[in-house]
Image (cartoon, rainbow over all chains, first blue to last red; front, side, top):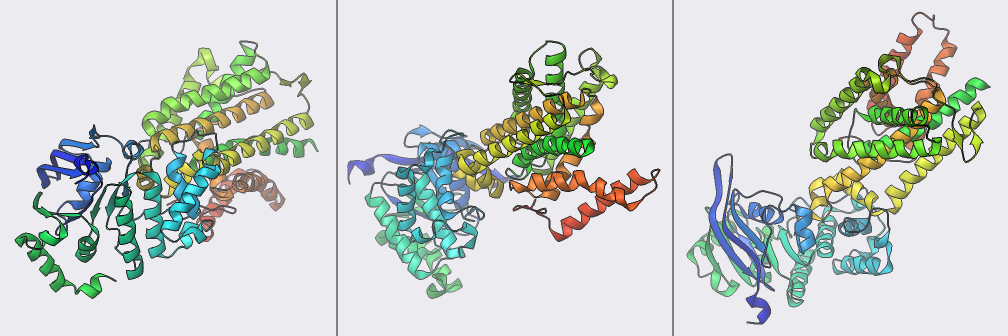
Length: 258
Length: 290
């Protein structure tokens, strides 16, 4: 284990959240190491997205603390969390349809520059935005309105936007609605990001993608982490095996990859 | 000829205030029923500064813009956090408050009697006294206002942030856009422009009273912006032309003068309803209200 791995990227301390009295999680504590790709799995409505959203400040916790790289980010607004370096890929993507693909990428920067300057037009930022677009194979579409992209391309654009805006990432269902080729290239991209020292927590229903991509897998059930471990060991866990088998019965693997 | 020049002055003044309203409604997705209040604040501030304090027109104009912008910051700080219909209601409440202040603060505003003897402006040593000079001033103001809106929306970081927020507030916030701050900034800019147009209006009319700044006026301004088209530079110009020249066209219909105003209002209403079905983004718009 390298020094990088010893540092904590994201930490939940006694986190609690309920909606209309319905408990999502209570007294949940979780510590995620830096430079690692974590996959968070679990049954529907077990609180996976709620956990990501509460880290980003999109949802307020009822109790507990969230720390990003040692900084208490509990209660911060999403834009403040992004500015510290933690970004999110939202499940519903949220592409800005009427502006260009490049402007979608540069939106993250727009908030940080002076409102009457045009710093983001500088070659340096343009190049950076284009290089991020090339990582997801969309550099040719830079000047097109984002609304003209097909859903799979919009998903790739949303990923590129998150990569541009932040240093570490929360991905909410990154492979939902994308084809197998993009799915494989996204897996490679995530491994590349981890090799560059980025930290990632992703929520995903495609367990094979999670097993193939992540260093460590966490399973959330009934508001607590019921098992945790690397892909090669997690399958020996009874809870995980039961969950994995149930998904394969519900939906054959080939279908889940579509 | 004088009447045509008078229409040119009104088209210029309304173009400025509608460009500013388009910043809020068209580019930011913030529907407001309080824009006439900022128009009025600018008008009263400039009128008081020139008549009571003896300020030169240009100083009064800039001060009126700044004052309107400052008031907007005080108002928008809490209200831009509201969403959708609640924001509309808050802007409506603000409009009512400002109207009643204009109406009842007699010592300052003259109350229902208003303020009179507002001098004709003198700009850079040139007396703007004649109708052609005023028409030129108001048209130049409209061009400057549209230029400001173009720079902000197409060449500045603020413009991209506005468009992003308009489409998906949560996604914009998740990319680092401070939604509240961006909206306060655009509100201040829009209020400043509206205040400036109010200042020109006051000095053109030489007399102002609260009846020019009612909630009906706010609705009228909103109608102009929606008819013209939201989220484009051409929209406010088109809307102002159509809505100001429309009564002139109706004048050819030989409607008896006793019922003409009511019939005109009804035709306005019908046009608005038809437009919402046929072209909800307005005649030259690129964005439709959700």
